[in-house]
Structures are given as structure tokens and as C-alpha cells.
Image (cartoon, rainbow over all chains, first blue to last red):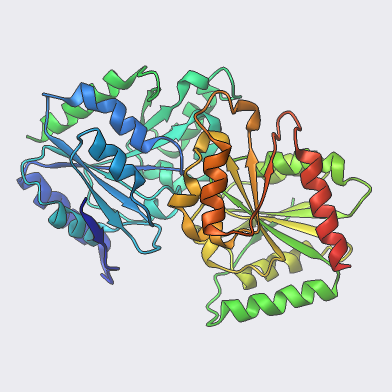
Length: 218
Length: 218
């Protein structure tokens, strides 16, 4: 397994650097998704669930960012999803230059889609543009339907909200209307998908959406 | 409702400041608990569940820290728990001086126990000593039993780990042995409580523990 220790960057203008990275990736025909969520919302299991629906439609891989450990990368590699492990050395976010360090190490120019699995955190990751073409946030049902109210920036910056663990909708007090109202209050254009990475419900729709987004860039 | 906009502090030595604050509080016979977790693990609902078991045994109150919003403080005040709202202005942690700003505004010298409900986040809050006498982290069952491996510092810094939502233990793949092994790997002395803030299971034991800790300081 490739483990990359990222260096902290001291760039004055991350926003500009992110624009540059986004364009570079576009020229290489690589679509970058920045996947964010709380710890335990199911980022890795969503990627595993997507795999059969992406197979044969595009080439993809995952850059797995963690403070420490490599359990998720191990899981992805076992499922034969090309992956590398990025370590942030305690930092709770990735910026564009750190993302670029990861991409260089990944060295997979043939990929149509790269998913950056960001640090599990609803605060810091939202503060830095990673250079991704799409920001996707997962909220799992047990976390509650009020999260978009409590973590404004994350939801303002998210293009896509994936609501995971809908198989336990009956077990928790989670109202679809409430979460949709709050999420659209933060970002009126946010696209919302309901899935269960466990049962597979809704995962095909999410995969179709991703394939379409990747296709639009080619 | 009192809403305090905290100012960012630029102290060189937060650790030393935290020691000073801890001593100041001890002299006032106030026990400060720093309550941390991911978003949606149930910090506020655990406090609500504790209320009947603390009633008549000690005077307590809550400082509710959030990036934005005041929904949790509203909930606490409705339950007649003395509370104030602290806003961090986007910051994902509180340090000792920010905690002190909150305590000054709270202005409740008669309290035996103050709980600082920290920002929902497993990264940044662990990096700053708030001056609390006890660091307590909640992990909820749906988040998974591997969190102590992924968020090392949070678990190293935690004196107490509260595992919440045990009413859904059967619904999720969460092994007590696994989480205990991982948590003790990070901190061999960590004390672990299993509760359901929803059903009340285990909450009395946690309340008894807190009353005992507060009593030890008097």
C-alpha cells in the first residue's frame, strides 16, 4: 500500500491554486470528487457500494485521507479499487496543494474519476477548496436531520448531499422534509440522493449521476 | 438566551493558560467537563438524559459551543437546564481563553458542575486543552467501533468514553470488544460507559460517576 505523508502548505492563495488544479485535471480528463462527512457516516462503504455500478463504465480510484491509520484503504484495496493512503499528520483538512501532492503520488493518469475521501469532519474540510470538480457530502440518518443548520459552511459548499443509512429511517427520528428544507436553506441548488450503502438502495441512481458528471467533462 | 460571540485568542501557551483556568475553577469549587464527539452522536440528548439523575445532587449548567445556530441551547433551556450559547465564528475548537470568555459570560458562580459542549468534531477540539477537569467523549453505535483507530488524539485525550445509542446495537455491526480494545490502545486508563440517551439505559451509572468526580473536588 502506498502511504503518502502530506506536507503542510503555506500558500497565500489556496483558492487560486485550486482553480489551477481543477483546470489541470480537466485537461487530463480526470474528474475529481471531494467526498466529505462526519466520522462514521459511511464514506468508504458508499464507495464500496458504488463499485459494481461504476464497473465497466469508467476507470476510477480513491485517495483516502486520514489523520492516521489505513484501515479504509485496506478495505478499498481488498475490494480491488485502486487506492492510496494520504496522511495529514494531524491536520483536519486538505487544501489544493495537499491534494496535488496526493495526485502526484497516485500517478494514475488513466483514471476518469478520482474520489478524494476527505477527513471525517464537518468543519475544516469545508474551509478549503481542494480543486475538486464536485463537493459531495454524506449525512447518515442516525446523525439527525438538523446537521445543515449546525454546520452551515459544509452545506453551502456541497453540490451533492447523499443521505446514507436510509435502511434505519424507521429507527431514528429523521424527517426527509426537515433535512431537505435545512440543506436547501444553505444551498438552494444542492442535489440530494437517498441511499443505503448496506442494502444498495438508491446507489445505482448515485452512480448514474456520477457517470453523467464525468461524461460531461470529457 | 445569552449568545456569546467568542474572540479568537492568540496565546502562545494555551497549555499553561489551561492549567491556570483549571486551578481557578477548582478554587471556586466548579468542576468543568469538556464534552466532545462527532456531529450527531448525542451530546445534547445525553445531557437531557442525565438531568433527572443529577437533580438535587448538584447544581449544574451547560455552555453550548457551536459554529452557528442555537438549537441545542433552546432544547436545554426548554428542559430548564441553565445554559448559554457560545459561537466560535467558524472555528472548530475552543481553547482555555475562549472557555474563560464563556465562563465569565455565564456568570454562574454557584454551579458545582459546568459542562462545555464542544464543537461536534473528532479532530480540532482534542488539540486544545480547555482547562476542563475531565475530557469526556461520546461515540454513538452507528458511527462504528473503529473510531479510536482513526482519531487517535481524541481518544488519547479522553478520560471517559461514553458509548451512546446502545439501543440500536443489534442494528449495526458494532462490537464492544473491538471498540474497547481500540480505545484502550489509545488510552489504557480510559473509563467506558455504555448508555442509551433515548431509553435511559446506563445513564444513572454515568450520573453517579459524575457526581462522585464533582464530590472529589469539593
